[in-house]
Image (spheres, rainbow, N blue to C red):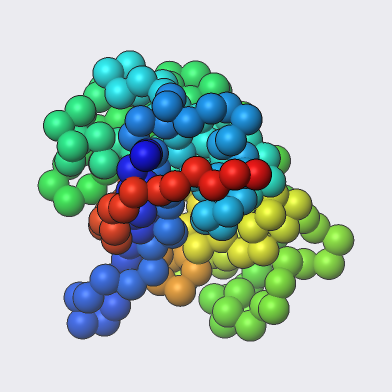
Length: 231
């Protein structure tokens, strides 16, 4: 029976220093034991914005599924999986989703990955004038199915407030979206700190070759046996 690890990725801090936010993630470290035809149904059953199936721990090869489709690249699944592999004694220097090699590193309480903007979904970027306008939204701007909405909290300090809506991928609103952070950071061309969802925090900085490093904190939620039900 495969083991399911549930994590929260890009965990932020509240005003008292306690954890807040973080995007739930399911990870099967022995995902290669789960038949390919079962992976999409499992991801749909779990209902997380993404579920990871690690096919080979030493090489970092893995696959990423939303409830409705497979993704070649996604930020919070890769940050979370890099952290989990290190915790389990399988630390790697790179992960290998279908998009390509993704360098990873840990520093203090943070885990970082490097991705390319063109690997991320083609999010629409909609800038608003204030964080309050972002908070008041009840859904994506009309007519948009993959939208990141954002506003400066403090432009001088590089602080951004954002929300991301991707209903076409089966995710009405994503709590913390690393792939969008990659796109937005590349678009702005500067280091930023993004507060997304209810309080998740994503750090992002552009690199000279056009790629972007993103990072954040990861916390374990639970570990349990997962029965692959008959479908």
